[in-house]
Image (cartoon, rainbow, N blue to C red; front, side, top):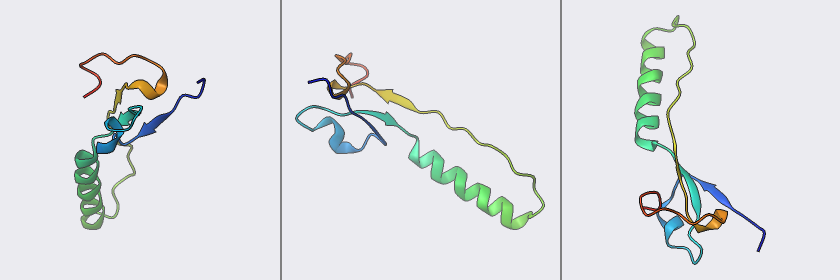
Length: 75
């Protein structure tokens, strides 16, 4: 009973497991859109300097981490 599990990507079945999985939700559509735009920019302008791009993520608390999720965070 002391094992706690947290996943990543907040896949659809995470909330349907017998013990719903706490996960980190990532903005996958934004990630793909920004990656494609960055690759196109790099192809059109090979001399562009490198840059770091950070996208936010959101922790979705469910029962697998031992916490009792609030209704607003468990969706």
